[in-house]
Length: 233
Figure 1 (cartoon, rainbow, N blue to C red):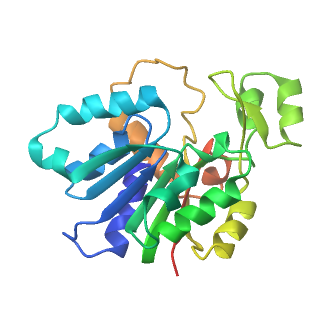
Figure 2: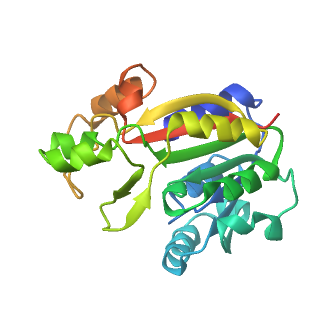
């Protein structure tokens, strides 16, 4: 996903330009820190206090220049209008958040308003068109059958959450003024890996396969996650 995001950034903005980045639901700050290290000015917004503490701890261990380029705000991603003016950012990330939001449209509209003209909106969502893949591959036939008719599922944390269909999000992005520019699949072949599995020796080959599948039909359409990139018109 990071490679996909970098591809979109490089293709849209001049090389060397310091971008204003907002990471909504930044978690422990993995992507936010990566982009700050790359020279961008990054703001992370996160409401989970444990995640905020982890992100601040990671940031504290960075060199001063990186610490100065990143700020962390504790808050709800649905309240971006409280913290920022419209058009304040060149790139807005919202990765792994929509599955926890029952009504995502207001959140998405708020994120689009944060973008400057030509800005990039990067979403990572659970693929609602492929919910039957995981139970089917594990031999849970009743679970696979039920998954065809819903966008609800139980995640690995045991939480009941929701997925999004590509067709629906394409329509939503067009409606909020940030139409879909590109989309990828994420975790096409590796979604079945158990948590904590050992990283294989040929991990670079694994990543090359996932990257290729994530941009190639029909593989990307059955990925566990979708990475959608919209552009503010």
